[in-house]
Length: 514
Ligand code: ADP
Image (cartoon, rainbow, N blue to C red):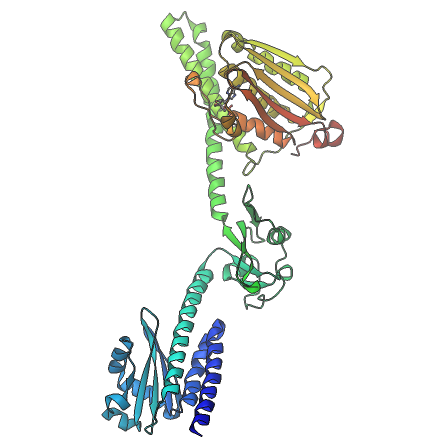
């Protein structure tokens, strides 16, 4: 008979345990789980009062039973109870001997069960009986399991709370989408940036029903995990600019897998960058006119009187310095306005005879080439089509290439400027018999401020902006720029301009579109 009763009790305990486990493992309802737990324990171990104390710096108490006797007993014997559980020990008045204070509450027995993980105490369960109930092994095992379960539940709740605090206070919008494309999480920053309802009603909704921005949806739904060359930028309706990152979540279960969208607000940096660019631009513009008249006066020096050899040498040095500064100012201005990310320059298209552009550039450099002992040739196809291009920019780009060939080719060499059609494009190329460039250096040559340092070119001045400008001029005309080079043999720098689209004169005519 006793065995049947024990088996029934054990089953009853197990059912209650299951309920406790369920309540504690659903994180969102942990507080609810804690609130009902004392009563479930009270039923299982037939106590008259149960009090759960969660020690989180400030005690949180949950109690069950008539008159909250267990809670009152806890308050009356707090120091002793906490000292015992801090050591991880059970305290049982049936073993220790009854305390006088319990009598005043009508309690005959008090049991305190520590709740702790490997490192520290998290609280205790206080169980009170008005009669001397015999707490047997079945009850004790039950209480041990409850205490263990509580400690695990509290720990995961703590981790979850910390993560939620980070997410809630993050100024970066974050959205998590599960494998089925349903929203699993959206932090307050995301609610604000994407104008989502703030009442968590988006959770469980299909992402395309909640996010209405096509570019963002495309990013979220792209299956590629490859890092893009350039971070994706997105502008909100409120005018904020975000860098958008999408990563896959490889969880162990279908519900923990999915995608996470993280957006970084770069509005302020963009503004700072714009201010900085404006500032540099203003300075560069303002430098132009003093440089022009300095150049003029320096050139006129020999006209106002005979110069000694030393004076002529100084005047030449001044002129060279001014030329370098002017070149740097012009290239910096070009690089700034053509910058693919921040440049504001609109192409000023007009009819363009590339043959004339090429021959003009060759003529401009003839003297400096000769001075250096270089042969400068032109091979220009007389039947090049007339195109609709930004003549000033194309001329500047070709000028940079010829200028480089003259600067970097040792005396005695040959430079050939060619202009021809190939595969529906016009190609402008500059070949030299200079020192050539290694394959490693060729790869980065068209990047901003990139210069190759070699002893032979130590005295050659430059900014590392010329080829960056060339590449961007070509790209703004839907073409490209590249180099072919063999060390100790020479280099050929080319830029292509497609005979198509806006480059065709018939289509856009004279326009300012890019
Ligand atoms: P800069 O000439 O002002 O330094 P560029 O962007 O025009 O800047 O050129 C980048 C680098 O490419 C140069 O510093 C030089 O090392 C290399 N380079 C350019 N043209 C040639 C060339 N024709 N022959 C050898 N090296 C060159």
